[in-house]
Amino acid sequence: MATVKIRIPTPLQKLTNNKDEVNGSGKTIKDMLSNLESDYPGFKERLYDDEGQLRRFINIYVNEEDIRFLDGEETNLNDGDSISVIPAIAGGLGKQI
Image 1 (cartoon, rainbow, N blue to C red):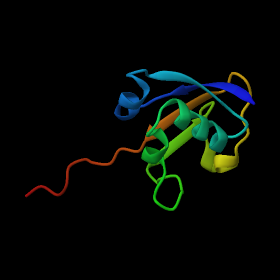
Image 2: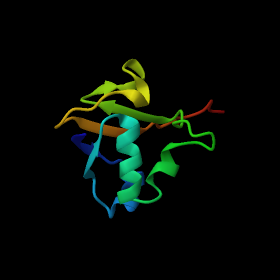
Image 3: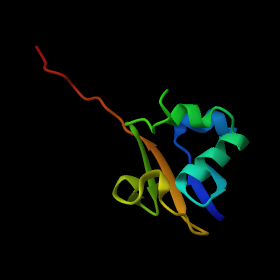
Image 4: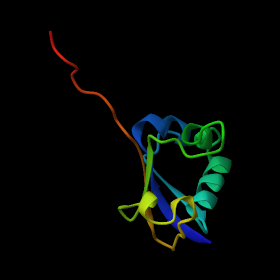
């Protein structure tokens, strides 16, 4: 089981006692997120939909590599890996009249 650092986005920091970075552990991203839920209840439900799938607008990076281009939630973790959880941001100006 690897020990990793997880960067927490501002909208989720209320779940981590206002910490912008926490320690986590797990063999894979999926394990790490489950373990994170036990330390910070409510965290996992913000990342997963009702069918248990990661929400489309949540991006997770391991050492700056998007897990979508690795093995998704089954991406293996190593001691010292840096994990970033980044909610996608949509917006901008629509057509102006």
